[in-house]
Length: 164
Length: 325
Image (cartoon, rainbow over all chains, first blue to last red; front, side, top):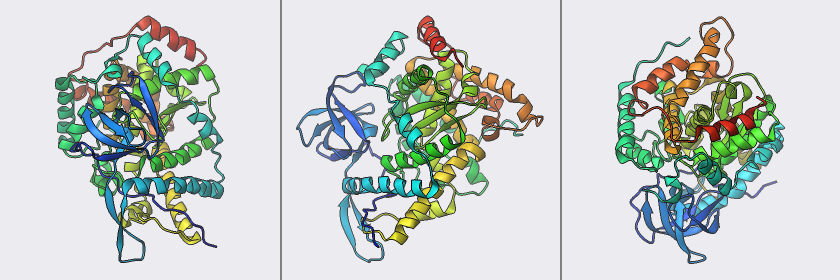
């Protein structure tokens, strides 16, 4: 019996080169991230963006990118490591001579379900318990608690408000 | 037993360059400064590369970080996350969790704050921390950002700065993708080089088995590095350098790492001198004294001791949260 899965795993993801131009398309490559009004972790959140969300490059400043969100039209800042340039690549289908053009965003989105299926398959084969991992992942602290934690001890905050 | 390692001169030069850049930029965004410098230099494994593996390369053993252009990663953040989950599940099969919600919450607040000033503050899921219930001096970081620290390791620390130093070192490994870069299982490297999975297509049961097998090899290789083999000395130096940068980036005392390492050396002396079986970090890491030596020659050269923080506040919350350990 054949299973139908999209295999988008293990493709080469090129270095995020700084030479982007206004209007270049990027997509969110992490599970979720925040669009903030300024280039810093303390800046107010305007919108939450999910995996695969498309944005257009506006400008860059010290590790942050100013972008315009395609769907909502909002402009704000995301951390550069949360996004990836959406490039067209030629992929050769396995066993075939021809190639076709896909975008890296398409590949990433297609790969998403596959990774979950892969974990299920692997879990079944090795009888691994992922419950403790799920529990560990729930320890994500909300940003406000982090800000309080940093401020209470008078730690450096400049990175939180605006990049220098 | 390993004697302190002499410098590999190219890497030493790179560290000096990185340290100088950090001093001169005066920029709070360490990640950006480091990344740009690394890209400009030799692809040390800055923002998205797979990290250095000079030690293994010298031995003639090929790692994934050797065969892939250091400025790229063959894995998407999502794939790293899923590999990381399996690595974490495997580690948790062997170690019980220290069940103390207040201690765990504190370690997460501290660790996630430190991650914000790392080279990669954003991961697919994010950095999360757990305490392992063992006296062994140990810590693990999965490619997905799951970081484990043992009770034995925490017991070596005396302050929030020092605990921050331990966590920052692990964050450095994750930020620089050392786990995946150190892979040396031939089947995984071959699969990546062949572009085994670089197409969108229908997968047969047979192909699914192949993919799952490579996924399994990848997980096993990373676990082997973390628990048995250890990283190369050069990779560990990178993580130590990153730890110092992260500490300074938030205002903690960069020399806190040295204090922990000194105590670690004392605690592990019998193991390094062959009088006791090695376990945990004495099995996988260079001797702490050699790490201190390297730090003092490079990353700590231009840094003043002391941090900019309220010692009363940090001491109180450190003691309140970790009193049970």
